[in-house]
Length: 97
Image (cartoon, rainbow, N blue to C red; front, top):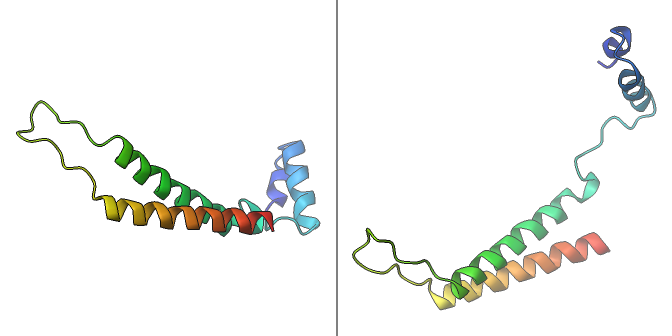
């Protein structure tokens, strides 16, 4: 697959890719073998931060609305923040061990 790059005269890029393929390093995955812990960390942190910010700064009323928007439910938000923190800590622990 990479041989056409070197034959086409692409230059150093083609030679480097062909050498990587010969060395068996062609099948690298984005973020290596740690993709799942990174995703757990990212989604957990986003869940915790998003719900925390929704509690701290609820939506503002708009000029078009007849009534003020409802605040997010406290119990649900606290459960989501807790789940997000658990997931983020789990992902971080998986990355560090």
